[in-house]
Length: 165
View 1: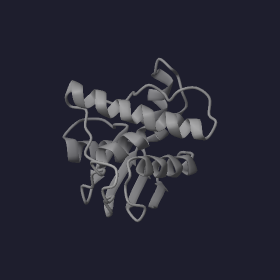
View 2 (view 1 turned 45 degrees about the vertical axis):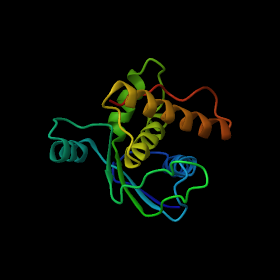
View 3 (view 1 turned 60 degrees about the horizontal axis):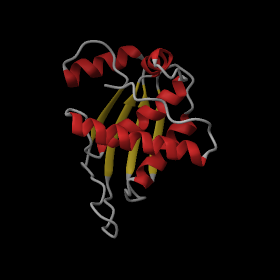
View 4 (view 1 turned 90 degrees about the horizontal axis):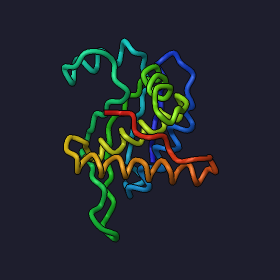
């Protein structure tokens, strides 16, 4: 799996954990190991600009996903995993830090960024949360992936509750 993590945010973030959880999520979703993904952390000004440009919404947001080849997980075991360019995930550590601090299960900026990375991966794979059913499916899968990753690393407690909208 070719995953690039670029930190342009001016903040210190755990780039290794972001890379690791992205790789774990893609493996769990059975995406071909030769696929490519880019994760970029940006400051609030850059995120606000992207949010306005692509979503026509004010202010910075936590995560945005920009799919390329529109890969989807194989529909059943034994199907050939898709291979290609997944696209870009853009994270905003400043927003992640605030969301983690404001969440009912207070958690760190890095824990929030890990969850947001999985959220971004799922969006790149075609998952969404516009309807209640989609939301239940996507956030359930997101929690299962983050919890599985945390359990494999011996990290205590369940994943943070979803704070992204």
